[in-house]
Length: 437
Image (cartoon, rainbow, N blue to C red; front, side):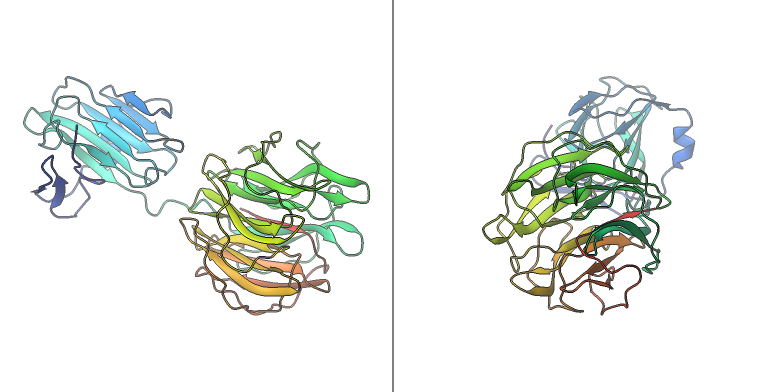
């Protein structure tokens, strides 16, 4: 098949639909009109197991959740069909905009066009039902609805935890859905500092690694979706402080980089059940005192840090499968001991840090993982702080400082950092933070 019909064929109420044929001409069809209710079609469908392959052959009467997190999927329709045969395809992981589905009509017509057309769908959250009408029209989309208002893969509340006051501590401070920081919660787990933290499971969090008077640590502490910190879990992976962590894939996490006898670049993946995997060979410049955050709904980014000889500004993108990419040339002031978090549903922000003295500038991360140049500082210059999301689409930087503080700075859903908010809780630095729901 060749040519492109389009990423969406039968958008409800859209008017004429453009189709690109093999000769490059744009053809048009009648308006889509009102589609049949999805629930009326789905009632007689036999749903199959989640399909993750790059190719599959569909059988009439079946529904297929298709997960394209790792690859595009080409779907071959039945070679013969009877009037009324129906198929449903659903975007299991809301990832078709990144890896589309391609439908091969296998010799039959599709929406009145022959097999010389390619049919592609590339809208996140799409549920597509097609029904065979006759030899002339062939398969016709009877529903083609995207789920733009589906719940965001983010969290309402946050938590700051652990740190150093002159000695390691383990208390936590919850952040409400409106960005209000609560008083100290009694420590659970081994007191330590230079920890990292991220989300997992879509609504929970995890603190991991760090250092205390007993040496380098690889223990972790899970955070429930109510913000309750669990007791220590025996460490997996190389014990180290000054790592960073972020979520990826919508429901998983990754710890990365840090320092042992020198900077390292290995990573440790966190499953959607909060299980930490063994070390993965590092990609990118080994460094410590860096930061990490999510972007684009299901990907992550590590950025900045110190490679033991100089402060750096390079970044490393994390795919939605948890694969870390090679270095991207730095944008913005090279610095260490900064923090990062998500904002605006699909973007991120690096902020504050140390470039020889404390700084307060920020660098926004687009939903494509592109880091912007410095944004003028708002609030007191600070370093050795932490950051997390709250309220689904906003963020908060907190604690740290040149002298230890508990000051926070809220981040709007447009990435604008607010002035200082008077500190709540024990002033400390070199702590971690993550969100939960």
